[in-house]
Image (cartoon, rainbow, N blue to C red):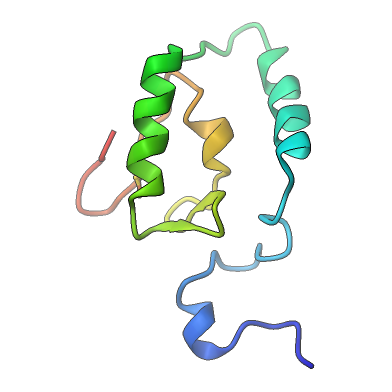
Length: 94
Ligand code: SF4
């Protein structure tokens, strides 16, 4: 059995990273710990983070429960960063 996505699946997956976006909550927390230790990184409020994630979870570009198809970012990390923006081509959603 092929591990590659079919043509129709490939349309819905981030290019070149389908293996790495399947990560556990524990791995997300570990990755976020590395980001949070960088002093110059400003974090958003918990309320803003939840607002952003609710928008992402309802978005057709949110893939595999983790990743934005437009930027390839893990949204549970990106949405916590104050300076982050939504990269939707039709206009930022948050
Ligand atoms: S960052 Fe924007 S385009 Fe990407 S999944 Fe979230 S709402 Fe959708």
